[in-house]
Amino acid sequence: MLETHLEDLEAEAYLKEKGRSWEGCAMGSSGRSGGIILMRKKYSMRGMVVYKDEQCTNCILEKENGKQFLITCIYAGTNIISKSRLWKMLGELNISDLPWMLVGDMNCIIEAKEKR
Image (tube, rainbow, N blue to C red; front, side, top):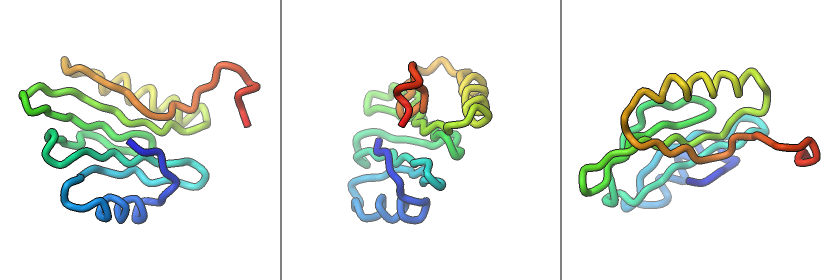
């Protein structure tokens, strides 16, 4: 998983540059908000995107032994409205018995002094 400031077309071009041994999906940046590129070695496991929006990409990955898990790659918005939409969607998505991994940038801080 890479955090990037590439827009959609640039992020897709980056994936293509990696060659035939890699595949993935991209969630391009928007304005000052970054995006995410999710990549995997093509033959290491199978994957399928099940949901994608401006804040996250959800994939089901299947390992060689047949075991599956859900991975959610997040680049959360910075305002309370977009964060609320993200948390609501995550609550609705958690309907599976699959192991679930959430990774990325939640844009959450503990103290105000962490802001730039």
